[in-house]
Image 1 (spheres, rainbow, N blue to C red):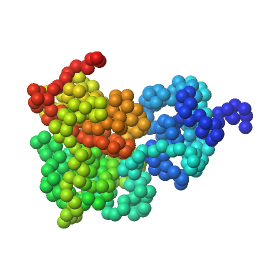
Image 2 (image 1 turned 30 degrees about the horizontal axis):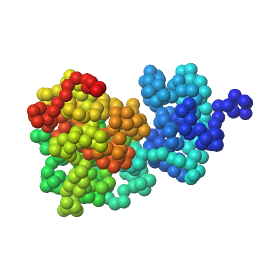
Image 3 (image 1 turned 180 degrees about the vertical axis):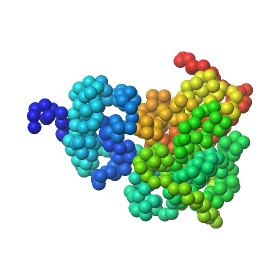
Image 4 (image 1 turned 90 degrees about the vertical axis):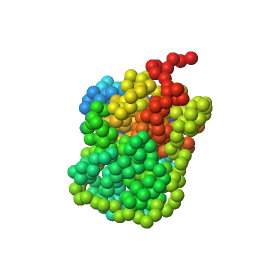
Length: 438
């Protein structure tokens, strides 16, 4: 090995000593499920080396060059003083190493032992998404549907649902094999979009063949759409799946999973679809009283309690900046524009039906340390009682699910959201414009 080649390699001992070095940027090039916690390629443990930034090398083939460069800059990989790359094998780092060299990045090294070596050393620390098992990936789902026993598989019966808002024809066109159809109207009151009553939820869940101990796997199809459509929420499939996940957990379903990236990622991975129309087999009883977890969805009085204790609680607005400052309401059925006075802005994406701020370029969940860092910067922390809100609870449900995956202890969704709050501006203080620091 030449001296130059040796300089481009870092070994286990040096990496272990330099984990807290602010001048070193550690980059995990493996697929995101492995980074989150799933065991891949026979690794002893799943997860990632503490402090590592996620940049799957597959993005180099699926994302155009300007976006790749933007991502590398946003993750502080470009222009770092020193970069260390690792994957499952030394060659896994080569594509990103080559791209960084082309962009002029100096000081790029490879951890030759990779994840396999690190994970095998039980004394070495590992970070992972606390509830990573609830965020499943296409390979896991395919193995399950093929009759296999994937890691963290269901303990009993499971149901797979294609979720959207009132578009059964989307399910009819095609869907993941074995999937049933779940219309969010079964779970929400169409007058205010809040969760239905316990009795209504009991009826809906029994008709869908769901009991409290059924493993429920949800996914959506994010067909292109925009906020000016009559019913643009019909296109927000993954947000719909997250909304269903929240309400199912509220009701008492203990094992609710989300297919990361949904229908789109399933198709992009080359998996089959079917057109068979499947009807659920109803069950006689849900098995427990609904709601089992009432703390997961709060109403207006509890929202006011949170606003009154901003040192220990946060009401987080999962809305666009234009919604936040009152330029638009964000919805064609909500007139007033503005925000709940005293809230904390948590961002979302480009409009009320997109969540780019919380997702990767492939529509999967954004790297959870990045989400947590953004929240910390806004004063949204694990020691607080945190309730998310948006217009009618959909976007807030997606952020709730991510906080749930991260193991946050006291999280909820304010169900009424801006739709309810804005109807009574006399009783419910409203702000517009940019908040002035005091």
